[in-house]
Length: 319
Ligand SMILES: [Mn+2]
Image 1 (cartoon, rainbow, N blue to C red):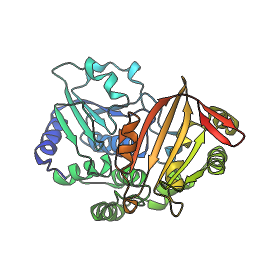
Image 2 (cartoon, rainbow, N blue to C red):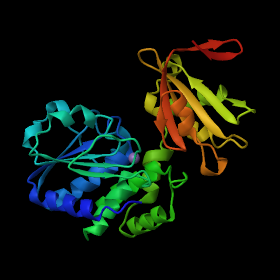
Image 3 (tube, protein in one colour):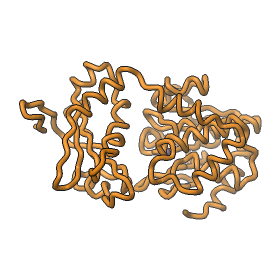
């Protein structure tokens, strides 16, 4: 883990010097990007600054029990009015569209934990050894001796739990557990977060998962467990693409498998592949994704190919 003393110090200095600050969450916001911008917003508001959150998609419905916040669409903001713009998590998903419109006298801070991010800010804090951007922000708060209240603790815990799959994935380090313990002491409600983000599944999600599980096959030669979801499956279950994300993680729990691949049809004749594995299985799925022009982490990566999924009598094929 890199030492970001200087960046943490500078970021807090510019926050204090700024009057109007924009926080940027990535498209199709997840618990980490949402938790990050919400925790930062709570801190910045306490300093008496103007702070707004922009995102190309609305505040996630499933997180509404945690906050009534709304996100502003970047199309409806006057970008010029912000002294400081902070983008948190997966900055290549949305933020890249506005970065060229930011003037030289405005300060940009990038907080991310994804490898292969090429976007640079005036302050760049990117480190793939962090479990989540919320973990980075926890370190930022701690370094600057910023008091973490219950609300901030709740949102940091949300990001920590989202990106570690409730402490199940291999990025759950002892440091993550120590932070979780500290956040719990500050009042972060773990059971409420689990209920909001993981347990609370719609019937549409379960039906879609059912379809994927039914079609799953294991290749005994390479230990791959694979399944597919077509546009028709999504329509029939009235499910959204966000319901697909966890399928490969669940398939990956089947004993004897080395890695899981879920192929899902998207718009414009593309198929998205998501790969998952676990540390003890000894497979680097980012290498498999790279063969198809994709990328990501060793244990979670993805790619996109052209084609459609055709259901046949014996199963399915890509055409
Ligand atoms: Mn994240």
